[in-house]
Image (tube, rainbow, N blue to C red; front, side, top):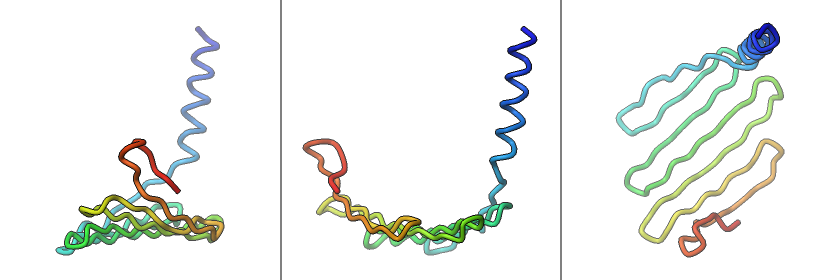
Length: 103
């Protein structure tokens, strides 16, 4: 029992070190919001209900890297594109027959 308690406490202590509290600016009339975290990371979310598009941008304060993602959900299907934190671009389309993303 003592070993279990020691491992449980160690897990709790390390999980708290790796997390940060994040706060939203709230959502404006257009559906846009900004999230800022205590660790310096921040995220912007822009929604467009007319086009079915959501654009997200993120910033990692520890590495200085940024990423972006654009999701579109229209009658023609779902698409996702963006740039990861290493600068690699991707472009994917939802394949409803295979029930998975095709990139």
